[in-house]
Amino acid sequence: MHLTVSSRYGAALAGVGAGVVLLVAGCGGTGTQASSPTPPPTTTSPSPTPSPSPSASPSPSPSSSPTPKVTKAADGRKLSACRDLRCEVEVKGGDTIRFAAKYDLQAFHVQQIAKQTLYFATADSDGSGISGYVGGSGSVSTADAHIEITPLGSKRMILKIRPR
Image 1 (tube, rainbow, N blue to C red):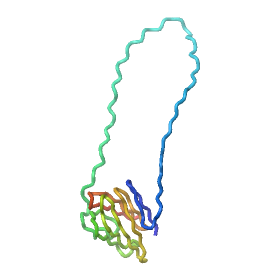
Image 2: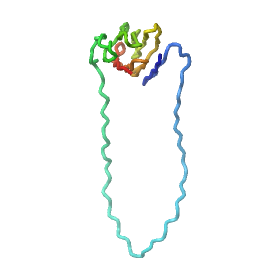
Image 3: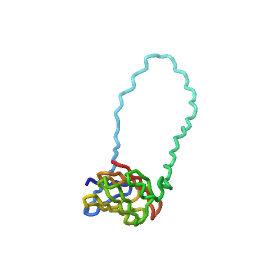
Image 4: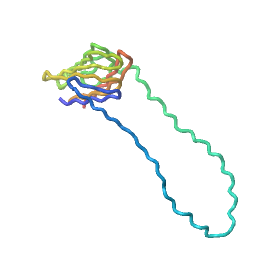
């Protein structure tokens, strides 16, 4: 089974003993730039007195509107809407979403939701599966499904499930 887990706050899979830390540091430098000498003027006529330029007022920057917060799942708590791998449901700890027998992914079990972290386990048609967690917003991908996870609070999440 192929599995990919991604999250804004971090994700981990059971059985993975090491984490990867990526540090990005910016560095800058200072330096001087050599300039060529200014060429002498080619004419000897007096230059006009420059007129004062109008004061430059800062142009308004486009305001960034906040991303709308999801507050309700399209299919509500109707977990059976997910049988075809196409749904958007609200889940809480203890919920199990079951999929049609034609898919490799048979079930997605929400073990627990705590502090905006979803702990889950899956079951495949061959009896195998995986378990892990996603903190905050993120996604889980299996051989059959892509599952986007959006927190609703400390104990509820919205799962948007689509076929891969």
